[in-house]
Image 1 (cartoon, one colour):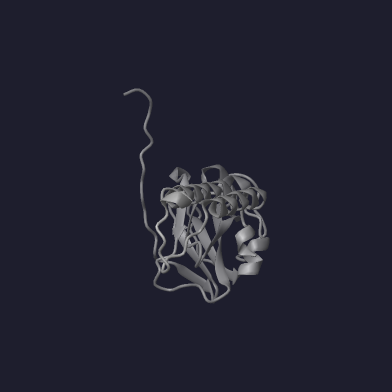
Image 2 (tube, rainbow, N blue to C red):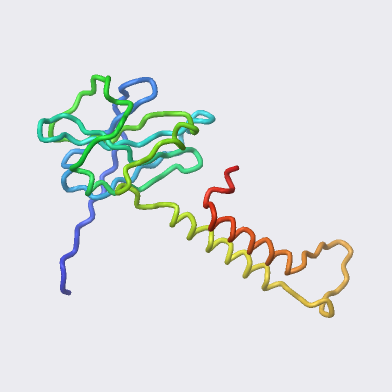
Length: 198
């Protein structure tokens, strides 16, 4: 085999340090060797109704001062996210909710911060662009595959009127109605991948 393989190391952090009623941090020792961080909810305690968690990455700058960058968010409806942090270990920080807190930290350890906030606030935030691994594109791809699968499945049952056996207890949906829905959904998804939220 030619080339060099990158080893994959999986470390699960479940011991959060609560720094405020609605804020938590997780230590990331040896952060220089970490390329991606996966943040996921365990499913045991959901966010309160209308709330979610913004996810921040903090690393110490050359003076040991924490630099915080917004990665994205997790919610009850989106309980996990993958973030690329390898390119974030330099650069400028962003506005964050952890500044005024007295967080115990080791100078060589990075941290992941979770701030519980209103869903409306999360939607207004702009994460650092290079952190996103899964984006609208992966959601759009999933939705497109789901649409294709549904249309192919429903079409596999299509019969002509001559082939239909009358059955008063069954309803039939014309294939052109399913096709029209499919085409409209694709068009709306292309215009705005989040149209279904309204």
